[in-house]
Length: 327
Image (cartoon, rainbow, N blue to C red; front, side, top):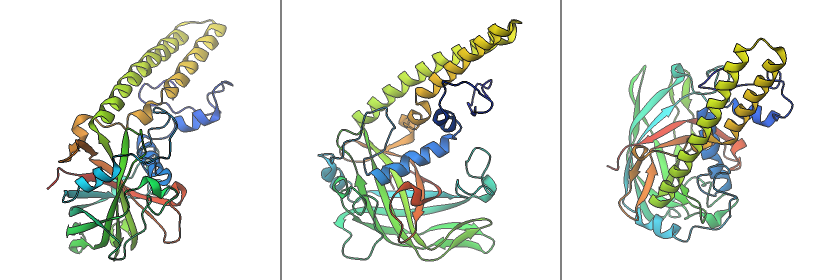
């Protein structure tokens, strides 16, 4: 796999180079979807906003001073959400080799319309939320009311079926100095939604979307551009060393070029490009009406059991959620 240009999936057995750590080799084999899932779910657990790895420094567990204003200004925002539900990344029988969802086990739920409201959600029973009910409630806006305007629906063998989500609420979670926060929606699913092997079982269902300020996104995009340039430099070096390895007949030189290629491959991983790639482009966000906030249109759908914690290990990834422009 070291010879491939598009993916880097060496392992400790086939790439027997002592100075490349097993942790690096393991992480290099993760699919982009798995990395994205880990990043977004980790933001729910740490309650420190959208975690972009080490690119922006060590998290500080202090609330963004503008969080409550950001939250209040979104009152009345209408969102149309599409869910793409599939087998979980932990289900080996239903996932592809790289850990992404198998297309055969997916189904789309379309037409879900919700309205964000400013008032607290304490007036009715609602799901516990990863921010206010998690390990760092001080980083949450608190659970706010969410009005369900229209159920989502999907096509099954029985025809058009509705997905009955109730007791909706939402919160915004944002750490001070973080380039992005998280907008989290929680629901109670009353009845199972199932199509072929893919299903949503009754229980708590959550959706998480990264949310940015204009300045934060611009900064992250600049860092992404720099990381991509560094990555390309090391990629070109790796390709050159592999080409030189193929051309020489000297066994020692072959070993030297292979070692240099392996070193370049490790430097490619150290750029943390797979993480930084999750920074959205300008056409992957929508502008919210106030405060210049930008909402990433692609998020995750996940769940946890009633008694489980909000740690990522207790989460089950269900699929992705796509937000269209505010209704």
